[in-house]
Length: 395
Ligand SMILES: Nc1nc2c(c(=O)[nH]1)N[C@H]1C(S)=C(S)[C@@H](COP(=O)(O)O)O[C@H]1N2
Ligand SMILES: [Mo]
Image (cartoon, rainbow, N blue to C red; front, side, top):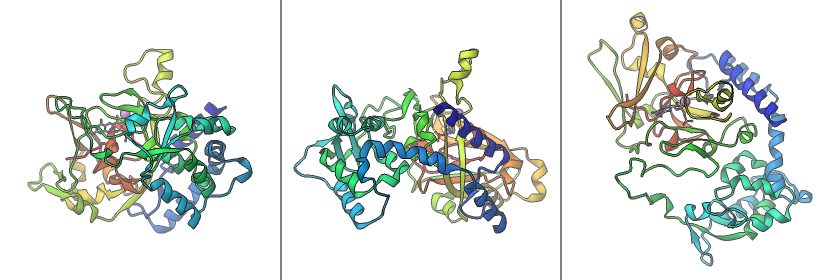
């Protein structure tokens, strides 16, 4: 039943990729007339996502609400007050690190979750509330991204229930601690949500449980699959620069992040999918090389950034020279032991097409790109296989 639903959704997403209709323009796309832009938005809302969203109501409703009290999402003062409690550091309670919390992901160790700065032991809650076991998805980790999926349930009552199970605070110094083993190229990897069950840890490759993908049109950043070939580069956005070189031109254009942000900002909602998605199913028929991905090496996000077309134009690419060029080659900051960088190319026609919607993205779902997804800048090539959506773009 669930598989059918997922299959149907993925089919729909793929179909959009194919027809380019999956792209929702929250701003007029690259030179797309406003009237068409509206039409596209309309087309999107015409899809029966409501039914898929409705399916999502089950999870936190079941897990965190007494059915008789179900109330709707609100932005009321009450919700914000309760939300503040979760944000507060409670001096009467002990402090835990995320790695300590992650050990509590089974009944023997008891089930802990975090929300904002709070640590909660929800073991008894699970027993006392029908359907409470749904919260097991977040066992040992943060419930925050789930609440983004099911924000309709973020209400004072639910937050009140959760506060009753509070046992501690999340260590506020957490984000600064690094594994200090400098000989390990993977000693400076970003923190990941426990829900991302890695198929491979070094480099990090993981997908979220597939049923979560169908709960919402947009995949929350923390649950978005990660496909890394190498250690995650740690890039200082204040000294970052992007080089754009056009064959046959003597001058190279160099853009800092601030300069890139001065280009008109476009938002494109696009699916990124690894070419290896569902490889585990293919392997059952005939062995194929590569990571054994399930069905969730795919995600959908709203990416924002500068238009590649406009950046290339600024770098001196003329319409009349286009026939001279075949590809745009991207080079990234993640390098292997021999110093060679991850890279991929796309055809020039895709890069300069007014409707190609290729962007140099610096935001993912309204926030700066997370490190795992290419901070500070990645290419988004809608409709083109994941591997060419180069992260940590350098050149
Ligand atoms: N620089 C760089 N870009 C990269 C990769 C990489 O390892 N390094 N992996 C690629 C592959 S194979 C995929 S499927 C997508 C995954 O993007 P995500 O991790 O944001 O989901 O990024 C692509 N871009
Ligand atoms: Mo991939």
